[in-house]
Image (tube, rainbow, N blue to C red; front, side, top):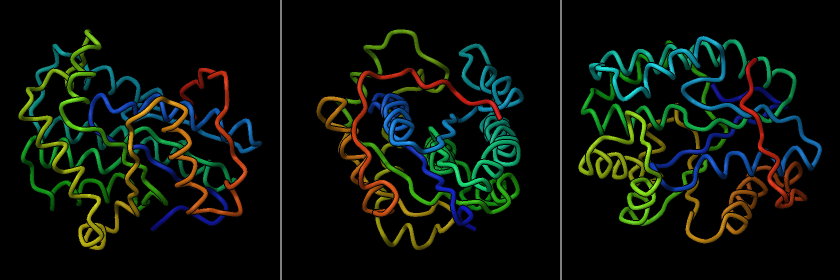
Length: 236
């Protein structure tokens, strides 16, 4: 089940260090400036319950099994879908989410080596079958993205995983660009590659071009917005 008519459900995905969260904020700025109602959310989080789960999931001191980690992510997603995403889509808003199910397949499926069938079942229960209308998958050469990640200094629990883990995650994201893979995983929705190399304006322009290709009558006039307005994470 994709987003209802009127609303647009857009997800930004990618490994650590690709500039995904920066582009999430910049896209929200550009869409708001063009007159769209934008609900900008992040996973895990976006609701009071989700933010509490986020604190546990990303705390480096949290000793979580892969199964526990998966269920906590799913719990945050279930709350977000029902409390925020679905109501926003019902009223015709643009819902822009930093991470969704594809991250589960990449991090818990490939990174943690959990069963994709199990992850699929858990997610279907969490989302009620809601799938993104479009996922923008940001990508950089792996060595560059990992160098950026390490240069940031303070790292959360996921960022502290070893390089082999992040290489597995990257391989899963690469697989998601294959049309055959997408056809076998309709719960992900369509995935479009975005080259994340270059300055922020260039990357934002690429993201906006992908939106205009998908929805030419809705987003073709949206321009890169300056200065960045520090979009706030939405709570329902």
